[in-house]
Image (cartoon, rainbow over all chains, first blue to last red; front, side, top):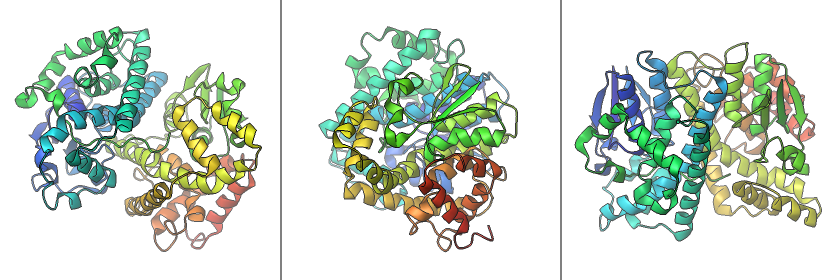
Length: 259
Length: 258
């Protein structure tokens, strides 16, 4: 039995939702309200060692037979490797596989932190203005960088240098995506893969967060439309009937402290 | 033909080297002297334009990211499997690799560079150092080298790194309470990558990693250190200080029972 605790179909939450829809897997979806801190409440099982230290910050939790998994890309890899049914979303060629993993690492360390910072400033901080973090929540967050990111959002404290650095990282990611698309319709060439799902889920907010950075990116724009048109992706984006899921942000992975 | 460009068998540089030895794959070893900035010279940039160590080239194709070079070696060559077949253990391997690479790894590097690499490099000519920094292609690496060379890591950064290692090593110790290897009962990429990143800690930061506080962690380091592939890899280094750390780990208290 697979259970997925998730929030709005955006960013990290969107990735496993798409994988489940692509592979047509039976999975119980358990929506949680991240802004009401339900992920730290009694409705979600007590976290294991690994999942209490989720390097993604806030993100989905997959549970299968009592085993817990976090980190949206690795959850996606798990679903693809554990469920033989449905289309394979990982390449069998070692070079393509290497490109997929290298993309995921770059996305975790560079692209996601960049997008997440802009997203939290624009869409999370205004919702928290004038509010205080509920008592006791901070103590339940194991990782200091996640605690700091929530406090930053409550204080709406995003220095210019941080915004500029985030925009620079988004630019690097767009360059990389466009370069990868030079060889075919998908990031790894001819075949659709977890790399596309990963990059699409992170990219989806960019027209709202950094319109100037995506302007003129023809390959990126066409590729985004190609992924979005897929019926499983369409289905995933409608989960929870969010009017604008691409505005849902909560603290994500930390900016790399070391190049 | 598999070409591996590496410095000392330490941190990222050692990962593809040990993986090839563990897997029993033939390869050409190219020693790149990081402290002489060989990695920013044109002949190396022609191999790896990012100017980072290690680099691995298989039949003309550059393979990316040191941890995932191990994955590549496992997929592309015959030999003992370095990835679990059980999907949950595979996930756990990935999870810990990320923890090593992104969480405790940077903290370890910061301590290592501030106490070890920096002082060694500072003995060089100042003008030569300045020119060497300017040649570094990646902005993040330029900043990191600059901080290491001039010893400008802030006390706040170093304090945060030490705190992260205190908790991080204890967490690894807990994970190893139920099984011998990081992902489960099988040696995997996570053990190789984690060992390369952390084997110097008992010497560099004994407050965090010692036989009393973190016995499972110490046992795991020594278990890994005794593997023939690791012994062979460590013997390929040229800098006596790394060999000394390795020896101290094996000879340390509790070394006999691991």
